[in-house]
Length: 444
Image (cartoon, rainbow, N blue to C red; front, side, top):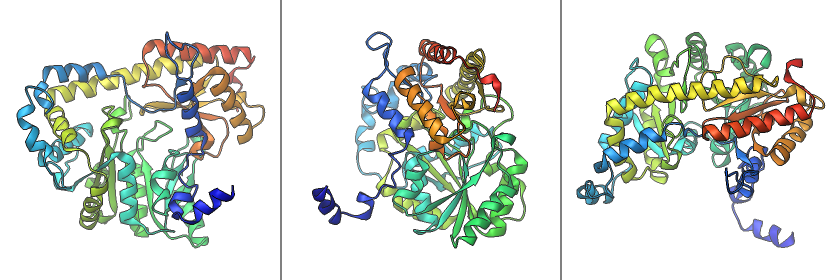
């Protein structure tokens, strides 16, 4: 212990603080999976990974395209003639054709209701890097952003760890489907002011992680009006925008501001990524799209610390420029996500487990295990979670790690496994619920 203390004294505050968030149950569940990974034949009793929001349902379409388009890669006989051009130094603006392809894809995902300027596309190392970069651009250490809760656990890392920015939760409740309202935002803003916290903006995830819900036009308009009145920023994390598989449709903040006449565009910023919509988290493609010229300039300079490789840009330019492929992929992905969501939630209903109503997007659903708690406390929630991870061997994420107010909610990811593994997961859940002699239809 003494040696550890001496070592800490010669290191930075970032190296020695505990603000990364890795002590959250959200990450502990991942560790349990890594120690005992499920495999249908080699380890059928292992832990199933249901804490990772990954879209693996359409890789067959992507693999087929790759085989039919070998020139998309500089590492094939057909594409090798581009190797030198792509491998040499590229500045932090990125390949022009890549920025154009990404802009067009973002437009298509939003049903071509909006247009995006390729010159405002700023690259980053995934949405993690994009979110941190936008914080560096908009806030100083000690400043705060309002974030509706429950919210993505890794926001504690992405938004706070290295930037020194604070998160002020905006409380949402199950009684109205965890709906965010301007009134709720006003309450959180006022409390922050009373605590002498300088609020620099509001962050929305739309579609929501972990709820799998989307914002309607009126709510978005009211929130744009709110940030304009307060002269603070609005950051919309729209990385799940192409995962909306049923009505209501996805509405981007870009569409909202097209309809409004009196607002300050400099306050509006969008975070995007290809990790969720296409299922490419390993490619580390994050995007910052800001309507503020100074933010675009600053974020582009900062992107030097987390660029997307030129090889990745080259490949994705070819993929995203194939309009027939993109149209088919987006259509098929929505169908498969809808079916998987339906099959999973209906399977849970058979043993009395309910999920948040109105969920129509994302790669997960918000499962209510409140009736299975010994008591309505977060301690009881974590006790149940440990049983689910250690005994049932399912890595699902407890609501407390999402900073929710009500114990008993769990996020369950459904798109990172095949149909056979889904059946294994459902069977384990059914057995657990029936053996416990309780059903979720008792209500809260």
